[in-house]
Image (cartoon, rainbow, N blue to C red):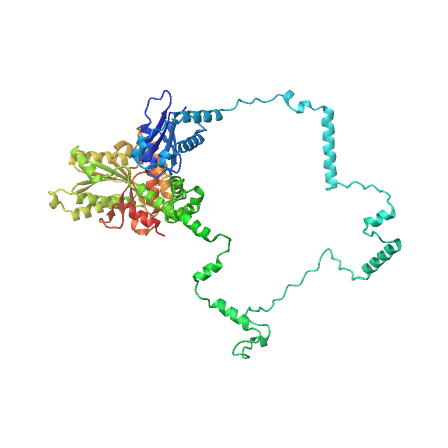
Length: 616
């Protein structure tokens, strides 16, 4: 049932592995994909991963820096895998605890971990416990309890129920059974009434006195069924705490400004208002006194600081909740913030804290490291090098820009054109936004200004920027294809394809964008998004990628390759959109727009963004 099970350290040393019978493929491919896509990218909030036709479940052991991974075919539904991987982890830790406590890769390599017998036993127990029960069939009438009842018993039961119900409707409480009257002797009566030892005449005299006392007392007021409405309470004068009710109490001229009899009260009030600063003697006075607890509190505080405590989920829960709220306030999407906190919790659970560190500082440092890792690209995006490589192949390098309305696609396309010209390349702009009025004119204005900054005289009489446009209402995919062919013939280095802005829910326009990318196969697809969005960034990127995948004609569809983040100068320290976009796509932020001039284009500094994000 299982394809493989492997235990390896976070340094990449395989300590032990198991491969199922009949499995010929190596497990290194799926495990390396798990490491690249999940563990290195800080996406360990979920403990499952799918690679091609295999499902992988993994568990992190942060105390010994180990990773346990089990793989099986994704068409199987193995309900015991989660408990099974936990049992294997506990057994492996307990058996090889001394060997695992030895630090260093060479010591791990020198040890031999013979774990096959224990693994087979745990696997056998897990499979036996998960075997489905034999199917239960529906019982026949003869096997039911109802078939054993006679008609007479059913009628009596039904009648008895009715009688009970009727009795219950008439009297909510059942009538008490009449008490049996028993004749008792006079002596017994006296004992029952508490008059033991009294004669008959004394008892009569006592009862006569009780009768007179009851009737001579004032009769109690009878409450009427409808009480008279009470009059509303009148407003009473407010008496301040330090003012008397009598005018004499306000006379402080008797003894140098203090009223007689109130010297102690005035002195106490002054001592409460004017109090010396909090001193060490006060600290001793306010501490609760416990026998033998003087050193216990001090050692308890030190124990919480030194590195003898392993982190648990309960310890990190309040800190992570505050971190999550902080990230959401900094414009990180709510789902992304939850996944990041879950990933940090799994990364730290069971890990021993460092010396003189608190839970809050440990969690914060782990979250900072995770954010930096997310923002750093997992693949190289070097446009200048790629353009030079395309030049060697005598073809233009094609970049397509896409995004929603109003995020600044055309403006940032012009900035990137200026950047490419500064690096000595010629650019052809393809005006494929045939939907928005004024889109072509906007690009023509940018072309004219860029050529003014770099006149053709300085470049051998050839303009460094040209615009390829066919007007409005035409097929965008066809215009892009013609522009690429024109650039190849005219030896342009780069083709920048401008597309119409579209909302992610507009199916016809999303289909047209997918067609443009599928037909022309650009070298780079850049999503242009603004830094002002929060949760909307997740929806935009997910649906853009989904549309490109659904309308692609190849097995490996072209998705978004990079992100251009615009309006970055308007958000101060609320830079959470960068985290949301990078986390969703797994693609890097190639450029950041920081203003309205051609020079306002920067590359992203991951540590500076994380520093602004974590700033309180």
